[in-house]
Length: 334
Image 1: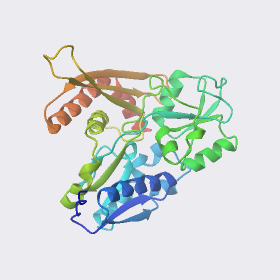
Image 2 (image 1 turned 45 degrees about the horizontal axis):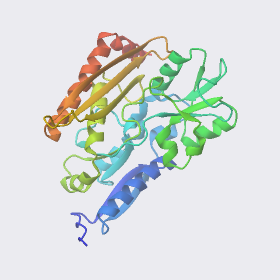
Image 3 (image 1 turned 90 degrees about the vertical axis):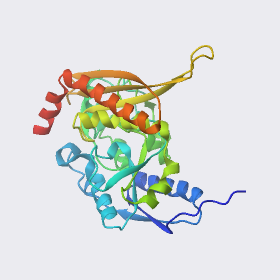
Image 4 (image 1 turned 90 degrees about the horizontal axis):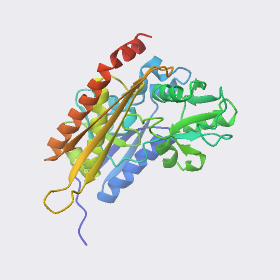
């Protein structure tokens, strides 16, 4: 039996929000690291962020989901914490100087979940039904598919949102499938929305670990948690969003898939193709722009990451040519 590697540091501190989902994510990464480094002491630094405190205003009006990570980043700057575990969909497209994503973890279900106590599916909702979501991305796609629906803002942690549904404030609510499954609430899911109806958010379903970019010891610890395939998909999605200069709380959707095909015969090596779809829409669903592109990725990991980034820019340019900038600029002026 091989001896586990000895980490270069004795203690690692994880900055985390205090919501049940955030704590699950931090504990999950803690367990994965302890499986690799049993002698490592791992502590949690629990922080209440500004995004957790302001619950009566739509996120788009108060700075977007970056409000959920800012205090965690400040803890890393102050060396009070070494890493922060995030839902990647909540991470701003541009990270502050001195910080980086040290690991892109294996992606869970990227879909949106339909949750209702009365109706079995989105299409089963009666005309004028009230649907709760905090996401402009979901809102624009739902309204495009069902213009008759009433979309009402829904804020708070998962338990709070479910409580509002149970109190009769909504006919249905839309939440991330992965989040519900992670905290043991899979039974609340009536169904997962077809991605042709509601394309996922950039990075949805994936966890990412942020750290100081000059902390080589921590980066070495995190390296085994990287999922190379997920990393390519997520980099393509984030490159699209970044090129559109969009944040986390804008009506932008992107979803990348890796597909490896084996040519007939033995003359050619398998090919890995990266397929990226992107959307930008008006919040009221009246306009929904769509674009997609594919590329074969090959070479070293660095070369494939460069190809993934280039694909993201290609799809973003297609959306810009259709008028995405006008939609996003109008939103930022509101």
